[in-house]
Every structure is written in structure tokens, then in C-alpha cells.
Length: 104
Image 1 (cartoon, rainbow, N blue to C red):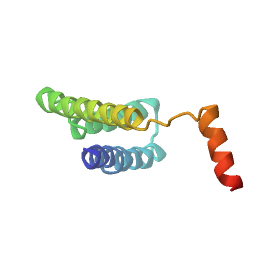
Image 2 (cartoon, rainbow, N blue to C red):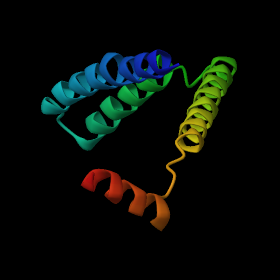
Image 3 (cartoon, rainbow, N blue to C red):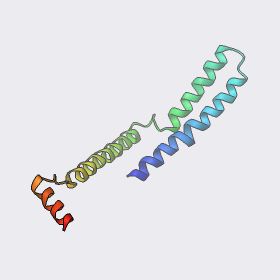
Image 4 (spheres, rainbow, N blue to C red):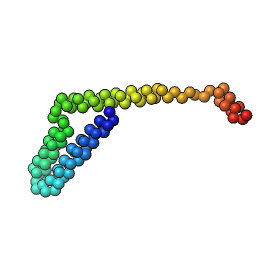
């Protein structure tokens, strides 16, 4: 599950958003008017939305469901670990016994 989330995050960040940002940034360097800026920005947004699978609702629902299952699993695992670690508190009698054993 962690591999899936990391891979998805890597794809969205480094294979979609970052390259499209560089393309838009390079185009903005040659922009002559605000209309060019708006055009380059809209083109970049359209490309990012398409490549991030945001225009495919059925795929988006499945990815969201997988993410939800991963979060539920992580919460259950965290609860299980925290509930299984039961650190007993030392009472005064066991503390006294420990000191007496240490002295001997």
C-alpha cells in the first residue's frame, strides 16, 4: 500500500507537475502580453488535469477508494501497535523489591 501511494505521488509530482511547470516557465519567458500568459497558463492547467487523471471520474473514484483503504489500514495498524504496547507501571512494592535485589 505504501508503495502504491509513493508511486502515485511520484508520478503526479515528478512526471506530471514538474515537467509541465518547466514548460510553462520557459514559455512565460517569451510572453509578450497578458493574453499570452493566460494562454500558457490555461494550456498548462489542461495538460496537468488530463495527465493527473482528473478527467476520468471512474479512475479517480478507484484511486480515492484505494487511498481510503490505505488510510484505514494505517489507522488500524497504529491502533494495534499502540494497544499492544502495555507498559506496566511500577508500584512501590515492586520498586522496593528491585532496590533490595540491587543491594544484595
